[in-house]
Amino acid sequence: MAKTEMIDSLLIVILQNLFPVAEKILMLPNCCVLVDNKRMDVKPVSVTLEPSVKFQIHFSISKRKIKFSDVPPVLDENRMRDRLELSFSKPSLGGGEVEELAYDKTRSAGHVTFLNTGVAESLCLKKKYTINVGEKIDACIQPYFDYELKQFQVRTFCGVPKRTVLLEDIKDFLDEEDMQDHLEIYFQKPSNFGGEVDAIKYTSKGGVKAYFSDDMHKPEA
Image 1 (cartoon, rainbow, N blue to C red):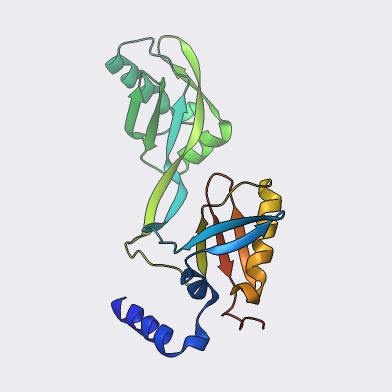
Image 2: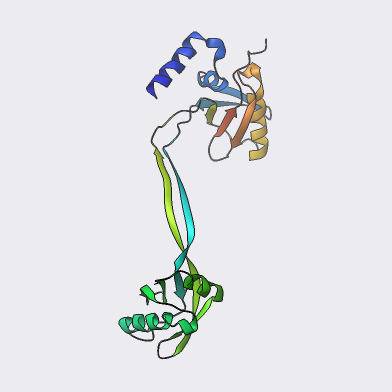
């Protein structure tokens, strides 16, 4: 990254006619903008990009695991877990051999992992399953999603975008929409060292960022 910054600096010094619009504006101590017959001096400053994080989350429906809920703890925790496993193990009710079962009495919910595939999918289609814990309870059945984090990247480089200018010390003479239009008109003019504006956003409590789409046009005479 250091090499790139050095090359950019040389281009600025040697090839002055190729200065980007933003670079030229940033060299100005301030920009005098006329808004509703009122003069306003705004200060152009550079924008620093913060470190960013990029990642992808892949998820799929488990073929052997389900979630269940609406099962209040009518027995002590160990007995509840045993009764739940017995209930989910009954093929006559649509269950199957249980490999693992977890139950959280504070949420009246848990999950079940079956030994074989097919059972979980069948129960999810039913959406309800009768549990016998001394009394019959219709548990709510939902699919269990497996999540996998992929392509996790942390970009620690803090750069300065070449086409972006942050303007500070803006006075709220008009509402946000009218003020943004005046600012865009000002920075659209090559005579103000501006150029074609790609995007602009003004907020009354902060500043405005202008994104230029091309290199600087020569100021009109």
